[in-house]
Image (cartoon, rainbow, N blue to C red):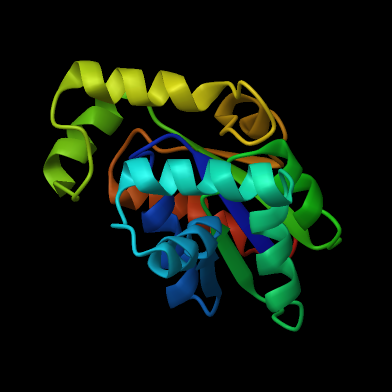
Length: 182
C-alpha cells in the first residue's frame, strides 16, 4: 500500500509519516525532490525557497514532475508514504499505482497555529497575519506550477481530522492499517 499525504501547514502530516515509518513504511516527500534541486542551485532550504523551487520544477517539467520522480524511483517499494502532495497532477501520477491512497489531514486554523508556534520550526511564520497569508496563497493555484491544496484535498480517498490529542490521532491511524479497512 502507498499512502500520500496532503494538508495545510501544521495539520499533522509529519506525525502521521513518523507513525507509518514506525509501522514498517518507507518515507519520502515531494519536497525531497525540491530540496535536492535547491542544493544543486546552492540555495538555502526554507519554506519560501521550497515553494518557489517546486513552482520552478513544475513549470519546467510539468505539474506532476515531483510525484513522477518519486513514483519511478520507488516502484519496487510495497509500503511507501509520500508527504507534501500539493497538486492534483501529483495525485493523478501516483494513482497510476492501484494501491495508492491519498490522505488529507485536517485541523482548524487555530489548532494549527498553536502547533506551529509550539514546534518553532525554521521558516515557519512568526505572526498570525503571515501564517494566514501563506496559507491562502497555497490553496488555489494561479497556474499549473503552483500549489493547489483545495483541489488536491478534494481528491482525498481518506480524511483524518486531527483536532485532538495524539491518542485520538493514533486511533485513527490504526484503522488505516487494518486489512479489512484498506
